[in-house]
Length: 141
Image (cartoon, rainbow, N blue to C red; front, side, top):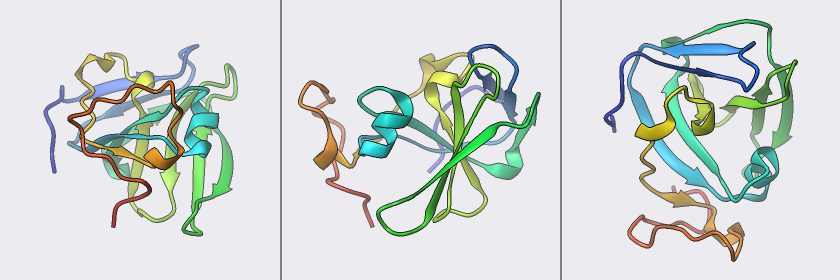
């Protein structure tokens, strides 16, 4: 599923050291409410922008990586700036060939349009989700 967005689009970390440009299509946009994503963002959810890894070019220092194991047993590798520590993207071991950008890292996040909420079983009671958006207790099959 392709979604409307500027092409190309770019983003990066808070200090500007780690930068990326995506020349391809966005494959998916959605909010993940799992506890790992809450901890990684310091917020209620991770606003995710899925793109093909080959469409993404990066510049600046190599990001630092933090790896956890997802509930289905595959690795989740989160990249963050080695200078300022802000999260930039992640690699989901269950989805080879893609990267998932943090919507907050986009230079212009105003075009972000999530299509669903996942892991809502872990959502915080103060997280007011759009009632029109589809909800899944965990990861949809």
